[in-house]
Length: 340
View 1 (cartoon, one colour):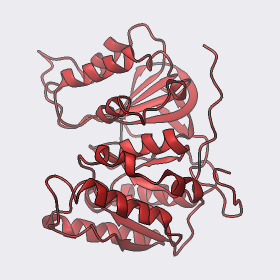
View 2: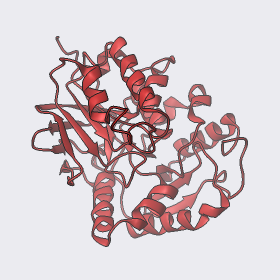
View 3: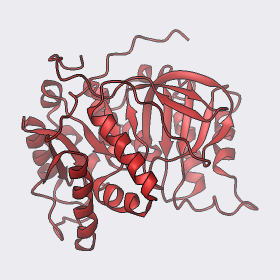
């Protein structure tokens, strides 16, 4: 296969100490019981050197059905943050089930005029895919504020917290490649091999859903990509079916490698006598496609999350259990042009 030239990723400018980071309800609401976790997330961001503000919709107990507000209201707030030159990054308070409702209301021109990091995963991974498809914006697939920085991080060891804090600070402020992400014993080689390519991914159900919308990534964007994905909830058979959709769409024939996150609360995976393992599911659908597969990597709902910046080139060596970011996710402050 001859790989088509990919558009250059649209990198936000590097953040500086004192820059404003806004925590916003881009999908689900803030339940009052999680207010302490949100407050702790603010502490973490401030310790990283940033000013922090809450967006107006991030109010404990405020909700509309399963969402923080009506989709149009969420889009209006997001667009205001995108247009505000003081706001230098946006981190989602939580995931949820709402982003599909306002994809057609996003101000894409505001993103290309002043690209900013948007941080989060779960439902927010849908935003990363759409914004990357429409503008080339690098997607900051990272922990969410409340359940992540204020939740999973606080239950990690002190050493792990410090490691993550340094990693996220470098991701947002550093203009040199991060290099190898810190591996742990959970990482497993599911199919040996080495490759380099740009990262594309998120929650697998959101990847599949997005490809059914007008905001789908062109199939050429998957050429030579390293596909990363995770899933939480549902059945093991659902994951098998999502992978089958990617196979039918031709995506699995285009990618150069795969990285799979730690599964979370998937029924069937804990019954080895009657159900396949996640590795068996993946290799069953891949068939004889000879691409490296690295499994059980810390991103997604199992948390805490290693950063997986959408659109950035990585080097994957499944046998050696290494994954390295070969490019920075942000651009130097001195460069003015978008995506420079």
